[in-house]
Image 1 (cartoon, rainbow, N blue to C red):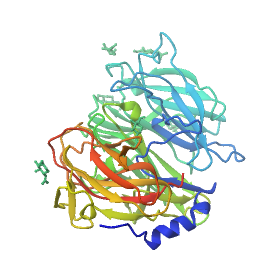
Image 2: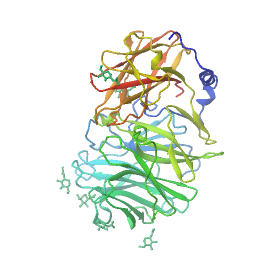
Image 3: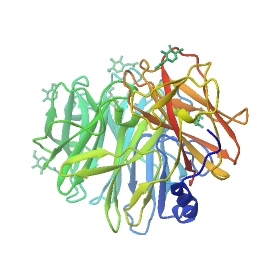
Length: 466
Ligand SMILES: *[C@@H]1O[C@H](CO)[C@@H](O)[C@H](O)[C@H]1NC(C)=O
Ligand SMILES: *[C@@H]1O[C@H](CO)[C@@H](O)[C@H](O)[C@H]1NC(C)=O
Ligand SMILES: *[C@@H]1O[C@H](CO)[C@@H](O)[C@H](O)[C@H]1NC(C)=O
Ligand SMILES: *[C@@H]1O[C@H](CO)[C@@H](O)[C@H](O)[C@H]1NC(C)=O
Ligand SMILES: *[C@@H]1O[C@H](CO)[C@@H](O)[C@H](O)[C@H]1NC(C)=O
Ligand SMILES: *[C@@H]1O[C@H](CO)[C@@H](O)[C@H](O)[C@H]1NC(C)=O
């Protein structure tokens, strides 16, 4: 095809880019590399995001695992904390829990899934985490406390809830009555249990419900109109799996059947539930899903995905999007507009077009091998963009492929991690930030040699409004 014509939708984005980028508006590109205000990758995996209890503090606090430089081990580096008033600009506070030599949280141990809840009675923040040794045989929870949300958390110790093993977990506080709950995988990871916490939030108080022989993990909770939604995923190490939810009018159950949170085989758009955030806008409440996009061979390069959820009756769904904006004051959100380039429009002679299995726009996909490519000439106006590369990869487990982008023949910095999808033809979208000018020749190429079918349906071009 010839020069691109930018759609009126995209022009709208240009026209309103200033208000969109204002303090009250969050902008999300699921799975993009997120950096902090010092331009370092945000290291807050398996985390939690909450507001401070102080009414004059407008910030959100993001706690999570620092996995800097880690490949496939989870050794404890520190629990990081970041703060932001807009979910876009994150300032790193630093480690709020650090390794302590010769203890159950030394740098040879495991500290995963740190979650923080505020205890009103004691005016204290209480952090819970999965504490373990390097073989995951200790299987404990750990508890640490701080008087301030972003202070140093003082470690109280690790233990087994009710003497039983505990691995993947969360704690969740019911904002309506202050009761708090531990949800944890137990009995050798087979069972999934819910327990109430004591009034200090230091210990589990009473075991409330156990799902037996399920092999579930990554728990999180939304309470919507008095109904509890318990979100979780299947277990498969760092490999993506589907995420589900169940509902109940009591944390003690009975719980509904498990229902998919996103289409089967989309693996929750290649994420695993980390934390579920409620944003009370003046016009509507937003139930914001924050998932981890694990990079199983390079854990330190794992990214994050924020998706809005929609609910209709008691049906909860992750909303599929490549880029969206949320007005934090009103709770209103929408997809960012984009211009769309389909594979069938590719200008490179070596594009190997094949029929699209997933009904993509243009009807054809580019079959990407080390010999083929997909190109287009850009003409949407100069500036920072995010390419949303739409692809299908029906490859084996934990086989990561990378898409490189060249601009006018020169390699652009960065590469998009194409997830293994372990046997599915669900079309995913990977973000690739790039600076573009009119007339740029953009070429996508597979950087890895791989015989498996890897198909690109097309590319969406969004403004980069971060
Ligand atoms: C982890 O703890 C379990 C239970 O105490 C123990 O059997 C196992 O040997 C420990 N693993 C390591 C690597 O220390
Ligand atoms: C450390 O873990 C051991 C079990 O491996 C447990 O007996 C001990 O109470 C724990 N101590 C602390 C302070 O966490
Ligand atoms: C602890 O584990 C045992 C064995 O799986 C089980 O019978 C018991 O109910 C568990 N206790 C609690 C409080 O979950
Ligand atoms: C702890 O459990 C007991 C019953 O075992 C119950 O009476 C009490 O209210 C519970 N406390 C909290 C804080 O949930
Ligand atoms: C994201 O960051 C990782 C780690 O620094 C890097 O390898 C990768 O190329 C980056 N991806 C993009 C699209 O820039
Ligand atoms: C893509 O190309 C490879 C290599 O030529 C071939 O083996 C594969 O069957 C093609 N995939 C599709 C979906 O046509």
